[in-house]
Every structure is written in structure tokens, then in C-alpha cells.
Amino acid sequence: MHFDLNDEQRMVQETARRFALEDIAPTLVEEEKAHAFKPERVARMGELGFFGCALPEELGGTGLGFLESVLMAEQVAKISASWRLPFNMQNLGPALTVTKFGTPEQKQKYVPGWVAGTRLGFFAMTEPNTGSDVASMKTHAIDKGDHWEVHGTKMWISQAHVGDAGLLYAYTDRSAGNRGMTAFIIEPKAWAGVSARPIETKLGLHCAPTGEFVFDGMKVPKENVLGTPGDGFRICMWQLNQTRLGCAAGALGVAGGCLDLAVDYANGRTQFGKPISQHQMVQAQIADMVAEHQAAQMLVYRAAWLKDQGKPSQYETSVAKLFASEAAVHAANECMKIFGSYGFSTEYPAERFYRDAKSLQIVEGTSNIQRMIIAGMACGFTPNRE
Image (cartoon, rainbow, N blue to C red):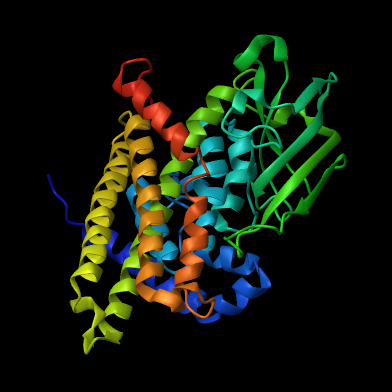
């Protein structure tokens, strides 16, 4: 077993680290206060190849794999969890899914723009009363002969109100159960019958735009069905297995960022005549953070490696997502405690990591959902899928 990164992977990692430090960090405090999102930064990330992993070169891909995507997302999330989101919205979500299930025309029309970061992506699953139970969604599309007519509401959709093109999941035949769900590629800014508004009441991820879609008769051309009608649930589950890896990479970055902050502060803060890093209770906190971060790193990297080998990875991806997200929340909590009163202050990044980390237990399938998936496979109820 080889645990060292090769030269190309280290270069990719360093490129992302330098980008986060030089392009994101200097203005992050002001941007967080203003809840600012910069589309031009997404385009710069695209120029650097951040969104081309696991995609063919003819569609703008870089020839790199899932592990390289994880390495980059991890470094960005160490500075800002908000700016980890584009890895999913541009690459591991829409671009990868359309590359897997789309027609040649769909791939050429949409994937290069997502990869370049010039066309902002999204994927719309969640609804006001539908979260973990994807099959309970109410949004539906009616066959009108030459197009589909969509009605319903989607909520908590990353990049909804800024998105140019993305994926929508809706029922086309509710009587067929899961097999009656269909995936569509939609362009909400260009089409009538859809409105989007931002959701600004979030605890964290202030630089990652989140919004709501309302569909009132939006017309979707027949050629914008992804796969075939009825394939939507299968496509949705496949996509989540990829985007969960992106979430796990973000959690890894948050945990690493909290660890770095805590160590630096503990070495510089003096109490009872010595740095608090020399007090055993603080050492115990840091030791637990280190152990959990290293364990999470091995799990996340392994899940990415399996995907790069084309091997089944649903089980390992859910394990990685569960452990890394829980480790990130624990690291953020311990970091705040090490900072003491300063951890409760918005003048320091500890509180931002704490707020951002909580989202990782929720998005792309909650921690409880991951436990259900893991237990089902461990007990033999369900197979380990791609």
C-alpha cells in the first residue's frame, strides 16, 4: 500500500493551497460579512482546472481523477468551506452526471461550460417537505407532446438563483414509484415559468449562495431529459455517491483548518505561566483532533481511489462522508473551546468554522442517512454500488 502522493498530485494540492491563501483568504472576512459570492472566482477556479477531474479531455477535463479533486477541495475548505461548494456544483454534480448519462449533444452543450466555471451549475432535489426521503418529492412534470411542463418547488439548492444550467429531479409518473422519477437539464435564467430567490437565513456558508426554485409551468424540451423518463431516481442516487465524496473532502479541509488554528493559538496563548499547548487537557484535545483528522483523511482518500479504479465505492464513500463530517464538527467544537472567549468572537475564524461545519452533517445525505446506508450494506441488505 502506497500512501505517498506522486509529484503531479502534490503539485495539484499546492496549486489549490496557494489559490486559497492568495485569492480567497485576503478578502474572506469582508465577503463573509456581506454574504458575497463572486462568479469570477468560480471562473478562475475553472481556469486552474479545479472542475475538470474525472472528466474526458474532449469535454474540458484535465485527465486527473477523483483523488486530485479531493486534494484540491480539501485545501480550499481549509480556508473557506463556502468555496468548496463549486467543486460539487460544477464538477462532481452536473458535469460528471451528464457525462455519465447524457447524450453526445447534451455533453457538448453543457459540460464544457461547467468545467470552465463560466456556466454556473446546480442540482435540484430537496423540497420544503422532502429532504432525506428523496422519493417523497412533489415536483412533477407533465408530458405535453413536444415538451415537459414542470410544477413544484425546490428548496435549499446551492447556486439556485445564480445558476445558469443544472439538473432537476421530478416525477413524470408517480404511479410507478421510484421508477417514475426523471432527471432533466434545465436553464432557469433563460426559460419562462420558473422563478428563483435567495435564502439568506443560513447559519453558515455565507459565501455560498443558496436559493429556492418555484416552477409554474416551466417548459423543458424533450431533448433535455437526462437518460430516459423513469431513470431519475437511479441517476440521483449515482450522483449523490459522487457529490458525497466532495462533501467528505470539504469536511476534511474544515477539520484540518480547525486543527491548524487550534495548534497555532495554543502555542501562542499563555496561561499559568506557559503556553496552553503545554497543559495536558489542551494536549488531549489536540491529540484527538489529530487522530480523527488522519483517520478521516485515509477514509476519504481511499473512497476517491476506489472511484479512480472504477471499483464499487458507495459503502466506502458513505463511511468517509459520515466520519469526516462528524470529525469536522468535533474539531470545530474543540477549536472553539481552545480559543476560549475568543472562539465565541466573530473577530476570529474559529466561530466561522464552527458554523460552517454543521452543514456537513446535513448536505448530500445526513449523518443518519449515511448510517442507514452503511448498516444496510454491512448487514447485506443492499449491495455496494458504483
